[in-house]
Length: 259
Image (cartoon, rainbow, N blue to C red; front, side, top):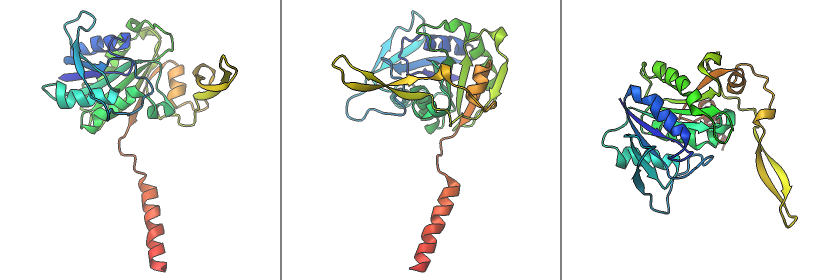
């Protein structure tokens, strides 16, 4: 099995090393990541400047790795179209420092890299860790990632599959299990906070209120993750609202008939 690993935290983030190590028992791992942190860049691609890929020494391992001066989506496009000789059988993005839950799917570079993979008909997985600590100990959760991959990669994922996985920052013994969850789209995690700059002008910063949030829906990704579960949310590429498509079609059909 050929496995492509990418992320949005940059080629030398500890999370990508942990992910690569967890995946090595399952196949041939190649790494293509941004040359610097590209968090919350969503699904941006580079259009008006050249994109370069440089081979790098990846944490003194023998793994083949490239640093790309672009976004996570660029990394997947470059890997599939240019860098790798063989098309990956699966793409795994992460391990992101910080969870990706609910509305985060629209902002996250980690998840967008997985979505880009699915656009090439390659099953793709995004993995995030539920801690905002500056230097988390990823070795604690490497066994969790391994166990999840052992189950997922034993089964045949559909080519357009996108899985959003969040790992609790807990040892294997403390984790309650795996919960397949919906996204809690009603949770407002990031909010603007007004601050005065040194000249006294009011400006705004996005503040992460994750630790202060209260969750009502006990089946949601937010709730289950905080309760000590690994969460998996299957996502889909086709964003067409088929019910609304039919409704709007009828509006214009009626308008045409009445004119």
